[in-house]
Each structure stands twice: as structure tokens, then as C-alpha cells.
Amino acid sequence: MAVPTIANEASILLTANMDSGSPPKSNGDDSLSYGAETSFSIDDASDEDNMINILANVDEGAINSEHMVTNTEDSWGKTMAGLAGNILEWYDFAVFGYFSDILSDVFFPPNQAGHAALVETFAVFGGAFLMRPVGGVMMGYIGDKYGSRKALTVSIFLMAFPTFAMGCLPGYESIGSLAIVLLTLVRLLQGLSVGGQLMSSLVYTLERHPKSKWGLYGSYVMAAANVGTLLGGTVAMILRSSLTDEQLHTWGWRVPFLSGILVSISGFYLRSHGDDDDQQHVHGDGATSSAQNPIRLAFSRGNIRALLATAMVSLLWATSFYLIFVWMPVYMTDLIDNPVPNAFAVNSASLAISVCLLFPIAGWLSDKYGRRKVMGVGGLLLGVFAPISMAVIGNGITATALLAQTFLGIALSFWGAPMMAWLAESFEPSARLTSVSIGYNIGQVLGGGVAPAAATELVDHFGALVPGYYITVVAVISLMGLCVVAQRLPVHFSVVQGQDEFVYDEEDEDEDGVI
View (tube, rainbow, N blue to C red):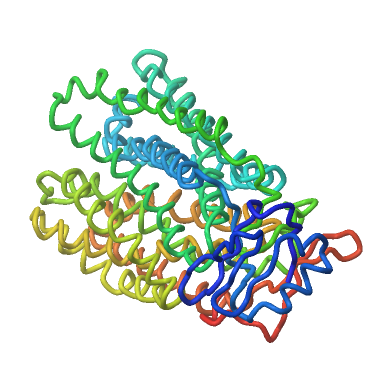
């Protein structure tokens, strides 16, 4: 067990009595009590040898390194700042999808068929995903070398300004094909930002809380992103219901993008008030090491299996989320024979009920029963019921469409909420942010980047049910990644002959059977 150097009593918090979750009690004489039987004095721990002797006498289970976290007075305030940045950044990223039909009219030649322009707009939407692995590597390196707060702050600023610029772009009628080029460029910059933002927010949040609660706190991170997506959908619903079609095409579509500058507020807060000791504080899983080259470590031989598993697992989340909650409103209004009345209201209600509210519950369940069990339920439900739900939505009835979409969202919650902690647990802290960003964003490119445009084409050529079968195929792939590829955990980190690498124990396996 790695022993941290302790300068004074306030420097760390040792959480004892794991079963009850109760903290150590101060005895008033510079000593800490762990239950009725064990206590030790901070003054006695003046050097590492003494600390080892002291800890050797502590009742087993009273102290666990994975329950050591930094003791900051306003950690919740800083966590909330990170989550606020998450909300605003994903609002910025999602509004493009919600206004894709209008953007196709504004930025593409007017003589194109509406379907072709819509596919091209979704292709630009997906183009941002190509930059996500690049952003993930860049922000991951910054986070693993200099702290997750710095990576999170950089990503927030990178999102704010291209989103604002998108709201200022002239359309095709003003500058011709240059409008398409500029739209693509600012979207690529958004992809660079979001590629590192979510995982930076995840690591920033989890490493400030006990690992025994990572499922719950990881779900907060993704729930915040979903709240941002919900906010974007709500703004789209309000603008579409209150403005005429001409007003939407002239100036209404610009409003949500111009408001994206608000995301910079949380960036300023984090830069001014966030923790500066990311690499010195004790991680939520007890580790304090830092890799000399996190990119090399991320692609080391022992880490490749975990990268493959995380990419496969992330694929189902990306594909399903962007089809169910970003592409679906366009599907319900423009791509089926019986359009669903109030499609954007249905989408917002379903997202709020099934994902934003249920995520913390699913995350808590994964802390209690294990990640793979909860995720397996969600993956199976998605794979089996996606085609059936698409058929129900295709009937064009508001109430049944809401029920079907909400059911898919509930299934997705059982997959996505535990996935956040599962991703972080797959990698050692020394290169955690780099590794998890790479694996997650590969899944995002192949899932979210491709799915909306592919589904639009599939509906046109093969019918309205095909996107449901698309989700089924992806569910099979991701379940294989969860149950077959993910077999071993890195059990310790070492530096061998000056080169960073993970060391695996063939006998060691997580109690849940997953990495």
C-alpha cells in the first residue's frame, strides 16, 4: 500500500469504518480514532517508516487507500463548477443537431433536395467527431501531466468561442460555398473541445470522491451532459413554437449559438478557484503516481486490451444516444410518413424523465451490484426493443411515441450511467485521462459521428425500422466488448527500465469480472 507523506492533520482525510462510511474522530490531542479499538497520533507519523508501523496496527478494513481523498473545504463548489461547464458545453454541442434541418437550408445550395442537404448537414455534424480523438489525446496529456482541472478549463474555453462564431456565420446566399467551409471549420473546433471535455470533467470529479461512490458521481457527470442536451432541445422547442419559419431561417437559429458564450463563465470560475494540486492530491483510488509520458503509456502493450474494450463499450452509448435523442426529433418530423405532433416536446420530456433523472439511480445501483450487471441489463434491453420502439414511434401518435422513446432512454441509462465509472476504473491514474479519452472517443467517432447520417440514408432506402436494427447490431458488439474483451484489470503500475507500462496479473480479476 502506497503511504502518503503527512505534514499535518488537515492535509488528508482518512475514511475509516468502510461498512458504515463514518470518518475518523478527533480525540482532541492530535490523534485520530478509528472505531472503538484503534487510534494513532499524527505526531507519531513523522516519517514513512513510522507511518507504516502505525498503519500495520490499524484494524484491517479500517483504512483503505481507495477511500483517501483530498480534504478541500469547497470541493462540492468546484465539482458543481465542473458540472456546470459540462451542461453548457453539451448544450453548445447539441444545438447543431436540433437545428440541422434549418442549417441545411441556410448553409447548402438551395437547389438541392431537402433529403440530400439534410444528409450533408449530418455529415458536418459527424465531422466534429473526427476531431474528438485528437482533442482527447491533447486534453488527456494536459490532464495527466498538469492536472484534470487545467484540461477541463482549456476545453471549456475552446467550446465557447467557436460556438459563438457559428452564430455569426453568413449563409450560402451571402458567400456561397465558403459558408459550408466555415461551418465545417467551427464544427471541427467544437469537436476538438468536446473530445477532451467530458472525460476531463469525469476524472476531475471522480478523483475528488471515494471510489466506492464512483458509480454515483460518474453518473452526475453524464447526467450534467444530458441536461445540456436537454437544454438545447428545450431551446429548440421554444424557438420553433414561437417563431415563424421565415424568422427561424433568418435569425432565430443563431440565438442558441450566440448564447453559447455563457459556457466561458464556468471556465473563468474553474481557472480562478479550482484545485491546483491535481497531481499531488491522493486520487480517489489511492494512487498518486504520474507517468512521464501518458500518451506512450496509453498505447503500451498492456493497455491495448483496455482501450479496445472501452471503445467497444462506448460505441453503444454514442450510437444510441445520438439516434434516440438528437436525431430522433428530425426523424419524427421529417423522415416518417406519419409525423409525430410536438416531436421536440416529446423528445425533451423523454430525455428529462429517462436519462437526466434516472442516471443517478443507475449509477448508485452499479455501486451496489456491480457495473457489468447493470450495464448488461441496459444493453440487452436496447438490443431487443430498439426495433419495436422504432415501429411504435413510426405510428405518429404522440403518447405512444413518448412511451417508446422513454423506454429506450431508460435502457440507455442502465448502460450509460455505470459506464462512466467503468471507463475510469479501466485505467491506472498515471495515464487515466489520456487512456479513457482515447478509448471513449474512438467509440464516439464510430458511433455518434456516423449514426445520424447513416440512419437518415437507411430510412430513405430500407424503411423506418432499420435504425432500430442498427442499434441492435451495435448492442451485440458492445456487449461483446463488455463481457469478452474486458477480462483483466491492470493491478499495479510500475516503471521498468525507464519506460512506463502497466503490469497485469493473470490471476487477478475484478469481482464483477470486468475491467
